[in-house]
Image (cartoon, rainbow, N blue to C red; front, side):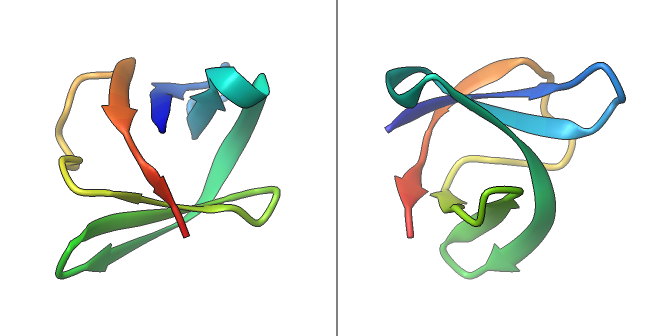
Length: 66
């Protein structure tokens, strides 16, 4: 699914899912051999293959929900 990563007003990493009209803050980041897994405040876990720590935000990326 396509999601947008950005920094919210408080400077925290947030994820917006347009198809669900959902915006949640990232509460945990985990690095795996396949990429990075972001855990959202609502409990969702999203897996990203092409995410780096130094990328410019906002950015639209493909994510897979775990």
